[in-house]
Image (cartoon, rainbow, N blue to C red; front, top):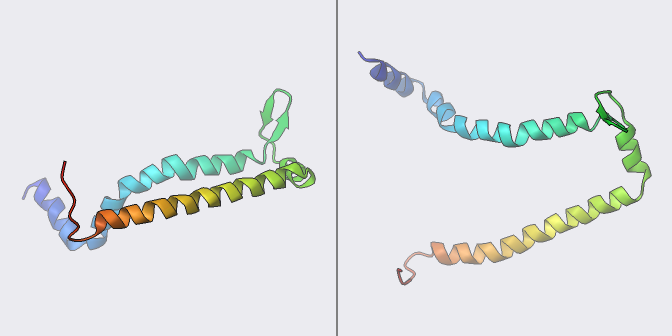
Length: 111
């Protein structure tokens, strides 16, 4: 048997391996572009800010400053409100358009 035949036989026997191999590229992209940057952001939020940059020193001072200053919670609420507004408007525009495109038997002119 060739190596290709061995691999195909293994994929046929082990069904979950197909799923893992199919999802692996997407999971790698998700990890590289979402999970790792968010984890770095969370870790760096505990660093202490100095005049010359940040010091990798565990500190709650950034969160204390966020809670004490009334501007930051207001800005957070405005950002959340803006995100929800944009999401709702996008859904209101995109769903009718998608419905029109997916309608069976719709007579549309082809370009």
